[in-house]
Image (tube, rainbow, N blue to C red; front, side, top):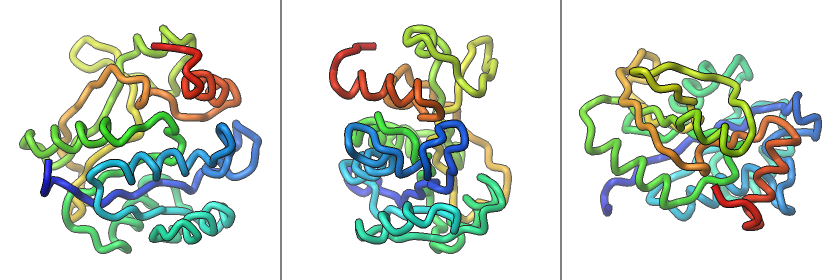
Length: 206
């Protein structure tokens, strides 16, 4: 898949109000910050550059990212979409850009590579990644958001590809639905964290 790389922006401004364990990206999972699992997956993929979008509300996260040698964009903290737009523009990204949440610790490089490959095969300027509701039923959890897409219930994963030059516009997106646990578990609660730990230890197969 040479030549298909693109830049990534990790959205890492979350305060983790439901987790109540400090800055959400820095919450430990098997001894590592959640964001470390995500940036490691990006490092294993064909992604070129990784930018971390964070606010002044998460100074530990910004410090960690800088120490890891990642490019940090301090966003205004006006909400997910405004901060995403700000980060992409501040990073000067006009080409396609992968947007990913910092709370997806099960992500893997090969999964990201597959998503990028599909993006370059479709005609839409954007791609949104979803998982089927059945995954959550199998692990006994409930998603935060749910959509009926062509008669099938799907859940947004927090992974998207957008065209940087059109970041302020609504972009037609291709709905990629993947039955992969790696994309299903955003860590929003202690229960989510516990499930991720069980899966990463190899004690639960989905």
